Image 1 (tube, helix red, strand yellow):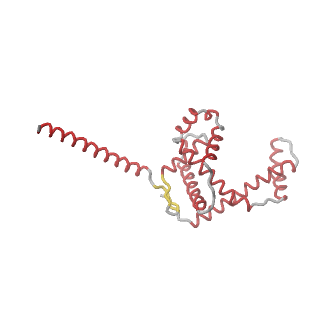
Image 2 (spheres, rainbow, N blue to C red):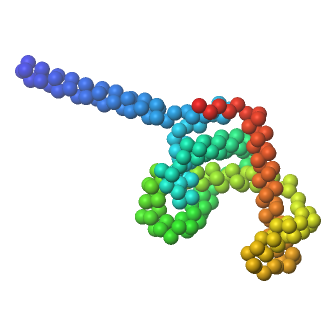
Image 3 (cartoon, rainbow, N blue to C red):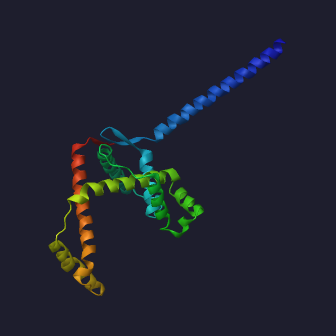
Length: 227
């Protein structure tokens, strides 16, 4: 009887020790993940993690059809700077009454993206493309949602401020469009035919200028640290 009890206790002890070992191993893995997922920058005390940079690079890999191995240290630096700008804009967006895109809108944008490459139209080809860029389905949904929301917020903020007069349209037609068409040997359309397109182009250019100036102002007022 005593031997059976000892044997039973030994079995319990082995299971307890095994459970402790698994728990410790799990903690070790957690610590390892924390070490790997370093904080690489802070924006007004909001941390930007290494994993966020890798996800952003993976998304650029996907939409630009560019292998991850081709990204240089300068590419990584530029992507990090874009993440910092995005966080500054997101802070402003969160403090406003902006209504974010719905899940249905995000799904539609992803469907539109998948139409741009023939192999992405099949689930097999799409999943292969994501895996090749180190992305998951959830990563893409997150990046698309961020992209849609930021662009919509910026458009709502700046488009009402932009006014393009007739003289600016005429100047662009005469000084930019016609010389390009002549060099290409393309027929020259009348101004009235292309005026709406020129106006839209000039509006977008002006919005981009206003956005850039605004983001520079946000940066000058923010506490940004890159590690």
